[in-house]
Image 1 (cartoon, rainbow, N blue to C red):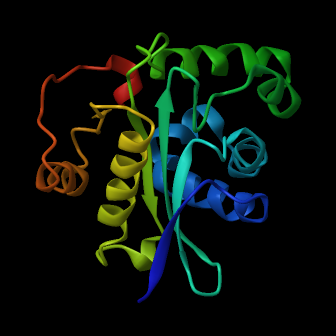
Image 2 (image 1 turned 90 degrees about the vertical axis):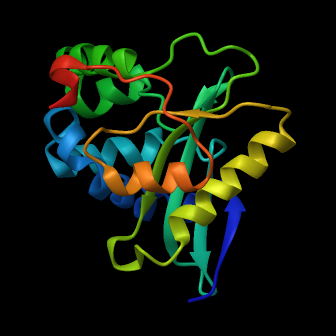
Length: 181
């Protein structure tokens, strides 16, 4: 399968990106962003296309995405106005708290944090995740970032192996309490 890694998320791929993000993280995010229809409505608008790289095939089909966070923003910032529009004020208030807990609130100016890597389930195990990670690393270097950090769920062994193969080291293990359900 031939594909290319490109910087940014074109607007026409937002619906597919939202679905891919939801599929990859619904177990963790379902309790906060669900039900699915509301989650997709929110994610279609919230995903910051300037804070990601994507993999697409020759027909322009989205195969995977990788988001990042810097001191200038993140891939899924959890914008309060969008949360209000989709979930109402009360629903937005507690959901915003969840986003606050998940974010590195004051990233250092030189910080580049891998937020998300998600690959279409039918396209997994074909090197797309590795190519997305390499794309993020190249982008980070081009932006002047000397270090790249990431968080990975302790249960996501495939991701841990991917990161280890690419030279990432485990520096810290944190218990997220109820956030780690």
